Length: 192
Image 1 (tube, helix red, strand yellow):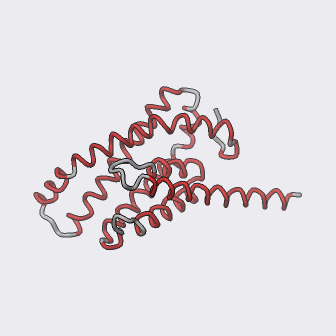
Image 2 (image 1 turned 120 degrees about the vertical axis):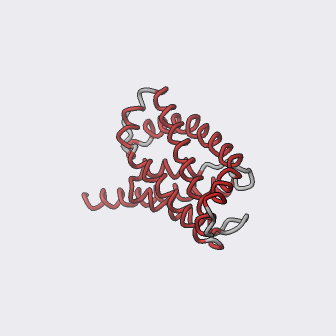
Image 3 (image 1 turned 135 degrees about the vertical axis):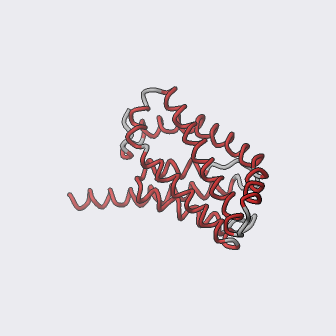
């Protein structure tokens, strides 16, 4: 009986990992042609929270690798520093989700605080990711300080839009999603 229970648990973990990786990719490609609108940052954070640091990191890095390498708008493999920056950014996002596990369980009973916390995560993680990816080109290409600053300034409209969209996405989608996961999927360990 113990072996069967353990096998079912292992199978559930494998299925959860595969389903969340598929969700990452589906949402990535679904919104690829809409500038600055993406849900993979949210999914990467969520997989870290739900699956823990190890499997969350696995899903985020494999998902971002497939998404970046097989991107119909252009593969990141043509510029490896950008690809490395993308992977570092998504690793940080998944690990942030994993680190939030204890706090999220406490915030599930405080909807307003949960919304604020989610929004701040979306804002901060998107800012760091955009900073990493924006700096990848000038730093790897040997730009001067002035040229690097000019590159950062040129990216302000893109980054600003991305920040607003991801902050809103985290604030509006994540709290109700977490409440439903806590209610219907107790195996993820989110307690109200």
